[in-house]
Image 1 (cartoon, rainbow, N blue to C red):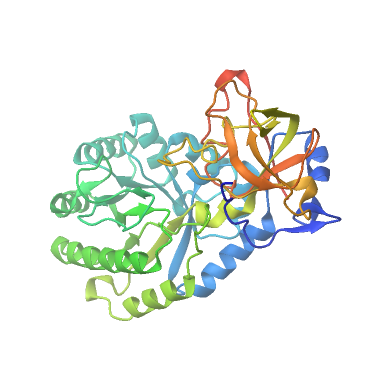
Image 2: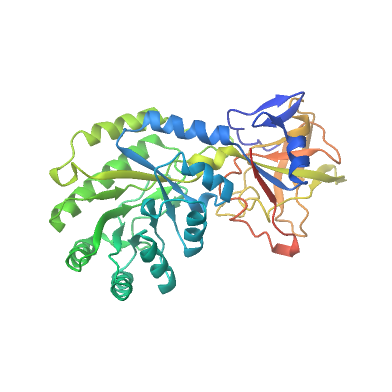
Length: 408
């Protein structure tokens, strides 16, 4: 038996069946038009944002990282909850603008921005987090041609990383941002060119469940930003401190103590250098805001036995849930939180593996998990499916197509 990850708090049963947003999973699947289906819970998202605001310093803005989940109804929901949006492509810019999101609260990071994307962002009034000197020169030339004043910040590749992070974005040679010794000359070039100087973006890593490591990294970010501001010779207008807050996916994972992180950051804000006293601070979070709010529902098409092992074959799979299958940056495959949605209140009764419908042995949603006895027609629920699911998985693989999505 291989243990399942912990089901996030806030999910319950109605008449023995998993409920999401106060409605049974089977009713939601019927309303949406079938399975596979991603269901996103407004209640979970709102509660997460409220808890985060309570824990964090009042002056800290909360930005949503669109790459985590760009579903249009979810973006509209986030519009009323967060203070800004962080994007990573021109396509994401089109998505946020289509939802009526104010471009002045949007920042655009990512290496390899095309000239068309730079022009699109400058024309809209988006802040560009510049990744290189060459990108800065292209942005300034485009702005000059448009007769526009660009909003420019610099993404910094710090000399440190976020300890224990699932994906390290800083420290050492990286394709992201400028090394620290090259930031000040570029900042001075931007300011001298007449651009609107929007400060720094420092993102050291993601998916950390170590509060002490996050506190340490936030302290390092503030120290580095203060030093760069002093060397630049102007007060720092804005600092995007990145994110890194993780959620529990696997057995043994423990949720972050946000109160401890918030108190440490409040203390740091009380002793800022003169160059940062009026700085606007922000954190950008994706999976932490929406990851636990999503459930992937997939229906069992077949129940079969092979060499004494039970396999529950579903109509979903890795083409929608690449991360849950263990094929999205995981070295050792471990089980995500998963349940039989239509038997949510039933006790475990057998060991079974849940697999998808693709013709590849990589298509597994749970290995040898302890589950209630399930049969053809039952619904399987994969939790922590609100981030890097529908848009980060190869839905076109083997011609299967995308899953349905709803916000409830």
